[in-house]
Image (cartoon, rainbow, N blue to C red; front, side, top):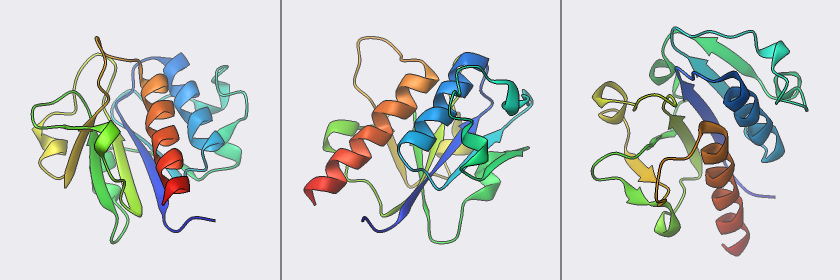
Length: 148
């Protein structure tokens, strides 16, 4: 069993299908906590794409601002297509990571990225949807953990 944990923070997600898919990914890959923040609060128990009902198995909180809820001694990591972001393929995940994902129709912005120690991106030809991005990132964390 690995040490540490991962937290998934979704900053102002837009699409219900992607929100459900992100919650399902968090459950599949063993995230310790999911935070959903911003003005677009959703009724998470009604998400048809969260077939595992992740909120029943992982602490899931709806908050005003995800950046205000970073656990003690946990590394905030912005996952976004922003200047200076490191390529996920060569990224070494922190033992305790607080991964923050932006909305499908925008970016995290300086309010969040300035508070993040790390900024990472998944190299693609175009942007991926939120659920796919959460899946790829958590799979990458898992695959690198097994090699360590």
